[in-house]
Image 1 (cartoon, rainbow, N blue to C red):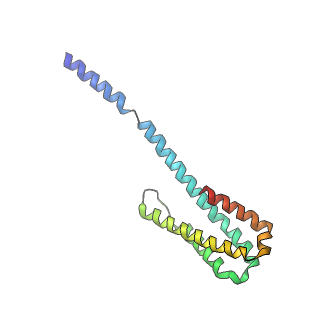
Image 2: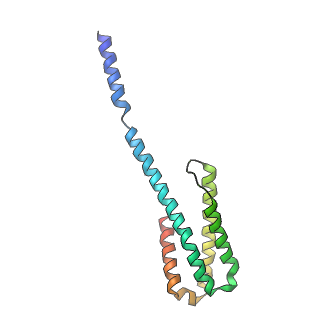
Length: 138
């Protein structure tokens, strides 16, 4: 009888303890997914801002066509990559494409510094501020 009672207490303890932590694991998993979703949203926002920025710069800097083409191509490569948080290769490709895009954007912003008229253009300043805000959130 005593062994039966001990066995029952053990079963009850195992059942009550087994639920501990499961909800916490699920909550943390959802928090990670939400955080990753926010990162992807910011990358998408950055990619969506780029055509407007390129068009604004293009109106002022026709001779810098190569830089503009590189930015456009880098943005296209970013849009083609399907990222999967569970696949290390796709994350690596995604990060590499984001790095290339960041580098191309840096060159574009250097071009903008060479054109005082462009820097004073309200459209360009607004787009640049939005892009900087997005970069800071990333």
